[in-house]
Amino acid sequence: MKKKITLVVFALLAICSLKLSAQVEEKKSPFSLGADFYSNYIWRGSLLGTGPAFQPSVKFNTGGLTVGVWGSFDAHGYAEADPYISYAIKGFSLGFTDYYYPRSGGSFASDSTNAIEFNAGYTIGGLSLSANYIFNKTSVAGSAGKDKYFQAVYAFKNVNFTVGAGDGWHTSDGKFAVCNLGIGTGKVIKITDSFSVPVTGQVVFNPEKNKMYMVVGFSL
Image (cartoon, rainbow, N blue to C red; front, top):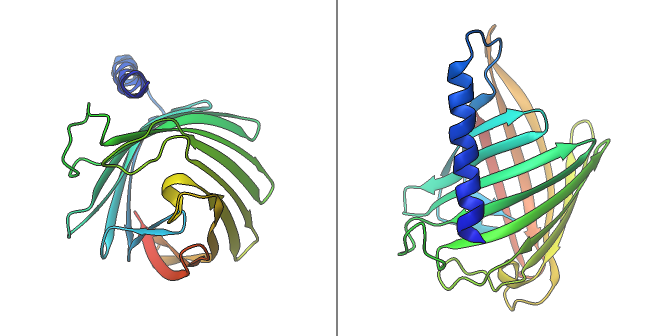
């Protein structure tokens, strides 16, 4: 399953690239790059890595289809590179994510360093709901197999609230519990007349681990 999904992601990226280069005129490229810088990496209520995190991304988007790779890296050796594919229509989305950890001791083709997750989501107004399911158990990546995570986010004009619950690698004992409570906000800082930087911040409390974190970052 893991190898098939990963091959599909990279095959689609290659096909889309060839299609793009063959077009004589292109008003707006469907390819995009991103770079986020955060004080630390908080994922679903847990701290991953140590210290500031650099999180690059590259993706192809056409219609409702998105194919890309997202990653997170820090100076202390944490490394994550996640190929993904998703399709969205009328507020609904379905997709797959391959969580890959290149510095964990295994190759990209190794079952121990990849965790494959099915993703489903629905957005209406300021409310976003998501359900996620890990298929495989991984000795290095840490998934237990059949890991579940559910999340609800409601965004008001100046603040957003997050509630998330899961089991498997999301909790200390693997049992299902609320593990992610967050409140966040953001603003756009104007640098020049033509250049602005979006800045976001969030306070996260994990009741299952009794941990609280703060994270601030900006995007380019």
